[in-house]
View 1 (cartoon, rainbow over the protein chains, first blue to last red):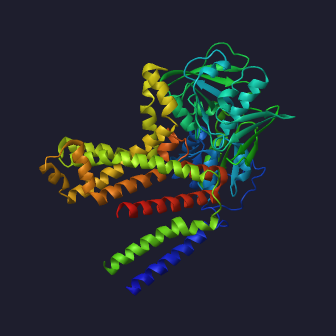
View 2: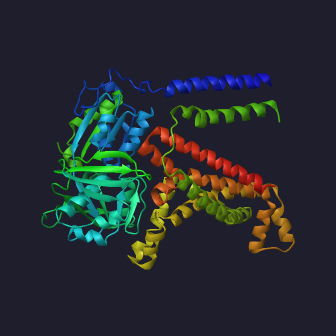
Length: 337
Length: 242
């Protein structure tokens, strides 16, 4: 009996030691990393192309929902199988990497997160993209959204969420339409500042009958597809990533260009915003999203900038994906340099 | 109990405690605000869901024992356990979207939008769906060893009274089913993320803590939920089995 307990204790101690070593923050990612590239200004950095021999087998990836299609296409182009590519929110993917679960490739729609990616072999900008609004039925003006049910990707977790809030207040400031009431009903507050405005977002957001707060763009789209909501804000590449062809319809309006596409419920309408509401460039105002916990303490503050996606590679296999991306025509996915 | 059994039991418990409790303490920091609210809400919603799953779980277990088509009923109750919880969330979302597709903005779809999706009733429903396989499987196991149903039938009981009496006679199984179904509510994330992510249940609270505040607060939140749920569950079990 004593021997059995002793065996158990030794086994547990060895396991503890092994786990501690594996969990050590200084442990390198499980890859053939050579010299880590600093990432603070790393966009567009390149290294010599990965060896062709590395471009086989299955690639693992934490890829933002918007980028799944383009990254999978690149992986296939590189000769890799794509079963290991997961659709994971940008922040969630980053959190996993920070905890030591490092994939071959990480792709995010939020260029601000590039500075937090440590140990990448290379970081490559896919380019900029535009904000769009998808609606099940045509709308004559953005003011029609007052009557629509919408889904809001939680700004605490999804960068598109706070950009939706920013565009809503920009529309109000420019006198186009005032949609702020539906967001204020969620507990969100808007306040003008000297150079722009602040959006204050509670870390706990309750849904209302008109606005469903959801964790990310994938769930937001599910709400739209199933008819729970009439309209959703989405990245243009996200919509294109659903394997849908968008055809222009009607005349271009001052605020947006209108397209029509098809999905499981039939036709739907896509309104691609024009500057400055598209976030293709940095907005002309200083816009800050301040996230406050229930005690009122600011947990995080974000300067709302333009939309730009990037891909980070952590292994030779990840390099294969990045090298393939560099050769692809990314414009057809909605990305522009 | 043999030495081998003791060794396996001790090593299993030690391994889990090490991986899920001891080693993560290295990163521990205080849980973010909102723990009490999310815990109390989860405890209440999960208790209601667990309570509501007992008699249906028992009824299906009793019916399934007849075999044939009735046996297939049991398989239906396993559906929430067979597919990933996220899929259950998508399935529920699709199911509750049909009124809107069929009758537009009619009163039924307005009710679903205002009271079910991302609402407390939705959380309760999601937890109930996920509690059913737990209750069913425990009763299914218990009924194999017991003659309670036959005994109460021989006394002339039927219908709801038969169910209640059988549940009460299967005291240990009922307590286990209630406790495990209740604890299941704390661990459920996938269904809630898609179908009912507000009010924040404990799982959503931990997930948010991880995304918004980082690893330390998420571990603090997880361990706080574990400690509180186990303490309440243990106390309830002791009290109920007196």
